[in-house]
Image 1 (tube, helix red, strand yellow):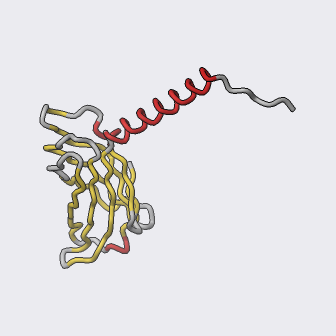
Image 2 (cartoon, one colour):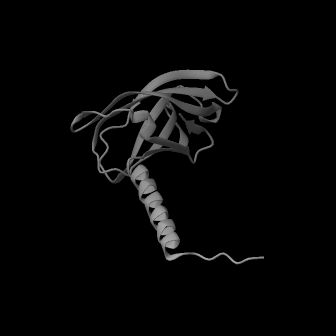
Length: 145
């Protein structure tokens, strides 16, 4: 079996490609707005949801209003509602709460971010805001888009 010989140009090219790949990934991560359903808990109003927003960008969001569908554990849509998560500071984690009046937490199966109703930063509307959102969940119920 013949050994492979790396030329210095080949090694340099591979290193540059690797570094460029890392900086592209970092640039994509920098524009990401992570939205995590952290937990659901019973409240006197019904079910309270805790949402953690991790804004990895330096952009301050003046508006971020989401159109959500709540699915029950049997997969049937329970309700549709909107939540406003703004204001969201750049390079900061934030926690927001919202109540699902009359809902029982154990009957909540998942949430679907259907669309972004409003997404504004200092310079105006943010284009294609939904693609910036990375949903996740630590709760029994899932969050997706």
